[in-house]
Figure 1 (tube, rainbow over the protein chains, first blue to last red):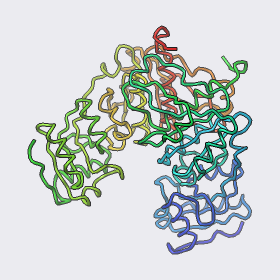
Figure 2: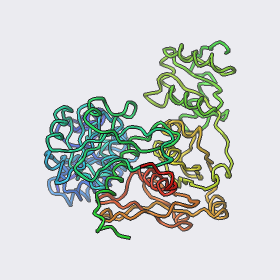
Figure 3: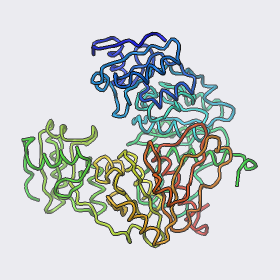
Figure 4: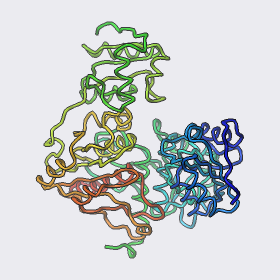
Length: 272
Length: 272
């Protein structure tokens, strides 16, 4: 590796670029995703994503240099602890941030042979979005759509909550919603809009819907639910609940994905 | 109601008490829970909790006074917008905070006739804790245990993420873990510790465990999982997943509670 360089000034262009990305919840000006913590750095490597740069606090210098030695061509920059902490979006950054070149996906990759797509319609909380991507990978979804108006997959908090799934699972962001609906319709993807279950329904839990074919699961905004436009293109699906108006968006998505996976596993392959 | 009073100083004792509770993630010095937003205020009223005080930003004065007129004996205090915003823990407080007397529960209420208890073993994130309580109520759990070392149910962010379920679902907090284990064992509650599913297991999804009897579901710390002490008193249960090391703690808890509810609904009552 190149020698680790030292950055002492908050006005350094790299530091400014990273700070802007964190504040905006977006990629850096150079199109890189900010991945905080050693865990996410490991996940980026495991997923064979290009790690362009490692920023480390002085107290994490030797660990960062260790990674740098394994990765030819990766820039390693060390910052004074106070400067690093001021930059970090989280309290648990562990003194390291990786700048990662995000994978680029096509709609065909996102849909796969038998689509199970999650559509985040106006979802705002990056923790929810990341948790949903993580559950989507866990239950065999083929991809996640981030239409315009939802939180960015490149928000460092989304990336962190995804625990690395955003390095592997196909996704498209800033998609025009009408274009996305047309493309999904054209490919015969059955859409389901997650809506709150009515109070009391938990007394007789029905299976939510038929997820066995090519399907898309729409998760709406935390406060307002699925928009009229998406709901109009979909069937409603709800999780029967008692006492509460609704579930947290990530919890609801996780349950529907779990249910979908259950339906899609070939019975012959089920273990006792 | 008493006339709404105006508080102009950050040094006012009530303001200082609320600020300390938010910073510590705990009750106020007077034993009141800080509930932000009109939604939580409504939930407190719907749940017949005692609302001791409403703090409002000047811009939300008339709405707050409207509530005050409905609630005899409730103190209404109006703060300049800037002072209120500086106090608020969230960006979406809507200019109102209710100080709510939390309900007090017994272990017997928490266990009910056929216990389905969630035990938060070292769980740290208040958003996760609140989302889990919300799912616990939704799927008919009888209560939630917050042993020592987990985030507080009275953290304003926990309360907010619970969307009001903490006003209704029995819970106990700061319970000594060894005492809790002994009490659960004595009452024949079967304990299940949620542990990550092994990669690849999603190819043959088994039912996670038998939740049909009196049981307790242990959800561990976000980074380290369930502790050795709790795991030693329980059977492991895991959600089969592919590709990821684990799920978000609230998502995992939601799925296991959904699964438990499915098993506990009498088949005769199921709707088609």
